[in-house]
Amino acid sequence: MKPSDLVHAREQLKMLNEALQKASQYKVKLEKQLSNNKTNAERLEEVLPGKASTDQQRELLQLIIKVNQLEVEKHDLRSLELLKEHELQGKDLQIVKLKTINQLADRIIQHQKQIIDDHQMPCPPVLQMLYKQYKVDRDGLLFNSDVAVETVKVRS
Image 1 (cartoon, helix red, strand yellow):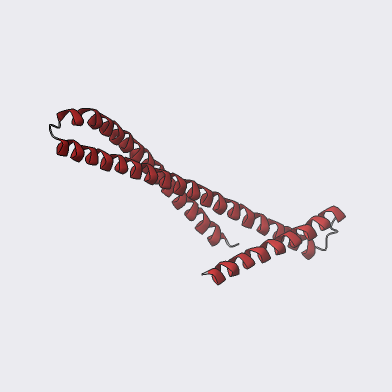
Image 2: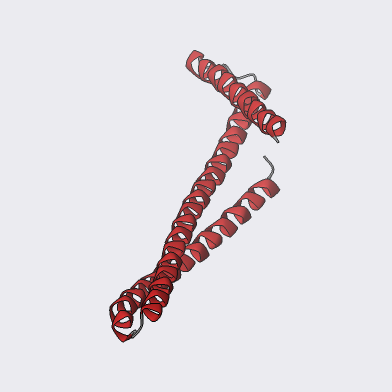
């Protein structure tokens, strides 16, 4: 991973953090609006039926109340959708952070291995075993991510 890649990853993290913050603020605003709408709907449900003088007016008011209830439910669903979206963005941010850390660790390991090889330093058996395990795990991870990408391409 090049230093420019790290800079790019950090910029992505910053953008994702800003997006999460905006989503959180929007969620708070929607929750407040939802609460106000529920309060207004309850108040109207209590007051309006008593003001209707005919059956048609009562029926119309009941339909209006039902529409308002459906609007509140719609806002509830939108709030849940935004909450799930916010959670997914948070998970995306965690994935980006972990990938950045993993790429940095890969670079460190590769540089350490290169230094040991270049200077023909003896590598302790434990470290040699860890390098081999790292290579196996890394190759398996890369293979699995390639398979996942190909699977997504085939499904599309």
